[in-house]
Length: 418
Ligand SMILES: Cc1ncc(COP(=O)(O)O)c(C=O)c1O
Image (cartoon, rainbow, N blue to C red):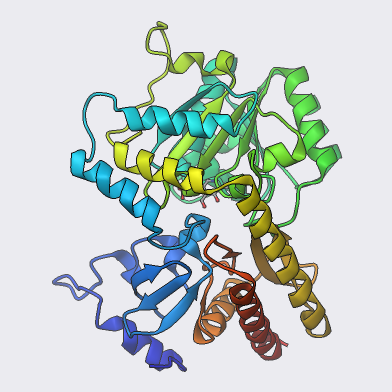
């Protein structure tokens, strides 16, 4: 089935929606997560293998979404499936510690020179939320500096990166200072105007929501210096960017944060988050130390996510990261040569790519949805914000194929939106 019109889209998905007695979808809006929303109607995945994904109508698609960059080894990688399967056969999670968690702790910390300890969570959201709580406990301050329009998950404080957010107490905004990305003056002012009040400065070195623009090395260096000078903890959020270098993207920048959050790929496709840090700042998490903070979670560090994550990290060698990043660089060059005349560009770094109208930081949601559908109709699944993430099963031929289809989709949307 080729989905061509909004009518078809609605019809194709509506049959799956389970309704309550009032006739409303049992999941609000018919979706299980906000990020699934792509306009007209959802599509449904039924199976994935490597870079391939099949939807419920039998269409074979190229999975350039990879569960929002998580599936760096594609769908159902045999070694990861085997690791998760073996772990699951022994039991899914227990109320006493397990050994798989230590393996993953070691694998993660080996990639993070300068950071000595780690705790696992069930999501990136929880990792960032815990990082903020930890920084507050360490410093005895409440302030949090973030770059404007970043995304650090859906905890109360993280949502404030995009300004006031419904459901988040207004007073929480008093503790948050937003700085435009790469604005050195504003960054310095955040510290001169409110000295000794910031517990943490949170940086994402390739913020997708803020336009997938690279953070200027000078901005990162200044954040590092200001944090150290003012007794503020520098938190680098690598939930997405960890895939970009053997030591994450902070390694590529040559910056060592005080705390680092990760997630997505380090669970091998299963739920995970991680909060790593320098030993001295992780101390409040130590239950032997009186007066610490609570970090728990029934499924935190469960053996199945841990085993799958260790397998994923084992497979993610430095040469695989370099190969994927080179494929992404070539795809960007190829796409940009073709897109220049229609006023669009593909931005990003390494294995992460996303099309934008040239120079734009934001794209209207309706346009993002149109582009998502244009790509889908051409057999490529993007994230709802149009981010494409390459995976290790892909080779040059597949990436060229993705690029051509993406270019074609962008041209179609550019024509429509003028
Ligand atoms: C930079 C960043 N931080 C945190 C998160 C939250 O992670 P999760 O969706 O696992 O809660 C995300 C999710 O996309 C993210 O991109």
